[in-house]
Length: 292
Image (cartoon, rainbow, N blue to C red; front, side):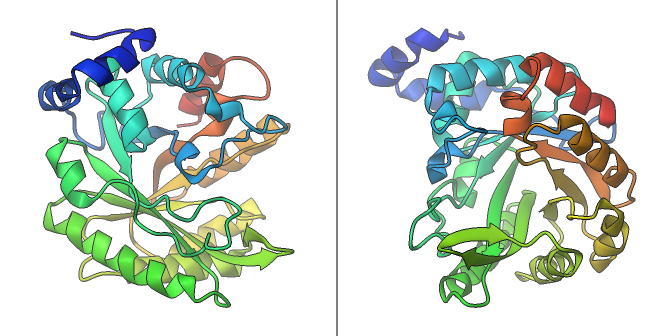
């Protein structure tokens, strides 16, 4: 039995076992469906304290509003699934909107946005055993590497072990690598071709096997560089949507070009679909589906 958003707190307080029950009866599907492409909506930003969208600093802090937007996105034809942390995925389970969807658990959210320890990105989200227990379909982890920050060493090691744990369960894990550095105290990801190429090479070689590893990659500053950049690995990849700002059409064109490349299997897009600059969620999602 599914419930409505206003009932979530009551169910959580009185029947916490309902979450495991909903996970146990959820109808699953293959990672890659009939379309041969993958479109995942991402909503794991709040657990890092990254709540802003455009000029709205707390846009993602309104949970009921976020859930409503996710429900709209997941209802659109061509949307394959969702990436989120435990709290959001469990809400969506209770709401009954994850049937026949790919459910991807976010694994490391400990590098809080703006914190002094941001680069020491601890695994504070889903563990491999949680993803297996809840019958979810994949995991995702963030791998930011700053050559000047000791915290990156710990993140590299814990990332490798997380990949091993997922592979032991034959569960896909999507690794989102960046070469990063601090600029005036703020972590910035380098989207130049050389930096993205280097990040792909490092991420591809982690752990005892790469059999279940996917890459989740940004489009480079110059989209024409993507073809050469992606020659750094044979691992399947999805594009990271990111926040597109006011130039949505320009972002769509960059994605369209990159989606033609042979290792690219689809996209994982978050705020630009859930909080589009123009139009509603359904329109933004349908446009993204059209790119695939």
